[in-house]
Image (cartoon, rainbow over all chains, first blue to last red):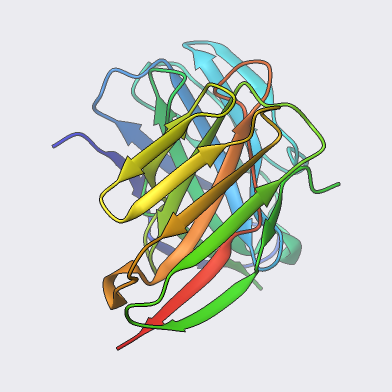
Length: 111
Length: 111
C-alpha cells in the first residue's frame, strides 16, 4: 500500500531533550515536506526537500532541522524542544505538481 | 500573513442541504488543491484545479477555480453525515509543491 509512515504517533517530552520524528514513504517520491498544524493557524510548512541532499526552509523553520540522506526518509529533528513546539506534525510527499500524500500525524507535547 | 482565507470557518447543516465553502486570496496560484481531514488523520487530497475557470466534479462535490486563479470554491450537494470533516484549500506558488494552506472549514452534517 502506498503510504507515508510517521513515528511516533504520540510523544510527550520535556523541554530541551532532543527528539527525532521519523518519516518514510514507499512511493519513490522526490518531494517531501514537514508541516505543523495548530488551531486557527492551519497547516504551516516547516521544511521541504526537493530530492536527496536538497532541503530548504519553509515558513516556520526556527527550532527544527531536517535531513534527506535517502529518497524515502525525511526525519524531523528538534535539537532543544520548547513548549511552543507543542503541535500536530505532518509529513507529506509528492511526485507531481498535483497533490500530496500525508502521513497520519505525530502529536507532540513539550512540557 | 494568511495568504489564503477560507470561509466559513465552521458550518453545521442538516443532512440533505447544500453548502459552499470559499477559499480567497489576493495572490495568484499556479494550482489549487482541496483536502479533507478527519480527526486523528492526515489530510487526504480531493482534487487539484489548475486552469482559471476550471470546474471539476467528484460525485456530489463541485470544485471551481476562479478565472484569475486567486480563489476557489467547493460546493457540496445534498450533504451527508459522511461529508463531516475539516476541508482545507491549498495554493501552490512558484514550485507547485510549495503549498500554502488555508485555515480550514470545519463541516458538520447532522443526520
